[in-house]
Image (cartoon, rainbow, N blue to C red; front, side):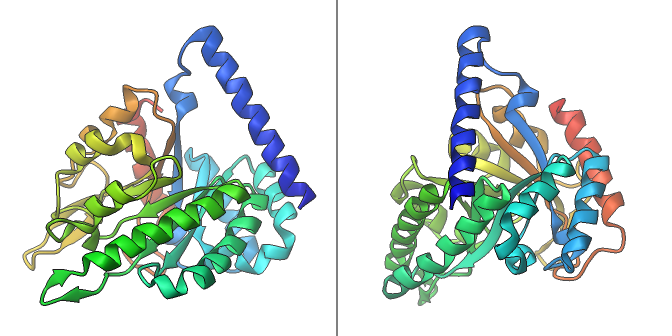
Length: 304
């Protein structure tokens, strides 16, 4: 607990320095505001053993990434060695952005139990250096083909509670979307945006998962970027069966330049995280090649 307190004090100090720099010199530069990370899913889920994760971190830094996300199961075995993990990541000049966890918060009766478990993950993740907690959910209950709106509201309530618990651990909560959050009218996403606290609940907008449903990705980004702390950057093309398949960034149909435009020309601070997971949960055959192309493309369209 002493280590976590020192971590929080250091974070507060860093925030003060950043604020002072803004007061003296105006807004911080784009490179200071916008960080580029990678999801480790391209190497499989979860990453084992821990030494392999450290090798991946070294590869990511060589490719130009400054942070990584991973399924919480990757680092769960290291919960008792959180301080050493933080040192290991720092020695490799990379930031642990966030653990990724699944939730079922639409059931109010299980809120307390689930939040308690997730708070434990948030605690050791913060000690490892994480600054965010990413959660996602499966498809909510439906009746006669219609979204159960009470379940959606229960999800929002659960996220509000979890966000408070995460904040106490030093993490910002981000909700990660899949396809289903955009499918209904009104959509689950519209309910979550309206009924979660904008001061504590942020969003991890996965542009690939939203492709083909809901609003255009660039339009959604423009309207909601101030509540999006992390973008999952993907590109995709439609298939004859009405689905989509991931492709190299810039090759597909997603308007990625439009997606990043509002964060480039504002005071937005956060992460653009590349997620290539075509073989999930198994590793891709050429993860470094996929992430190298993605990093080069992001640099082209962001200058970062």
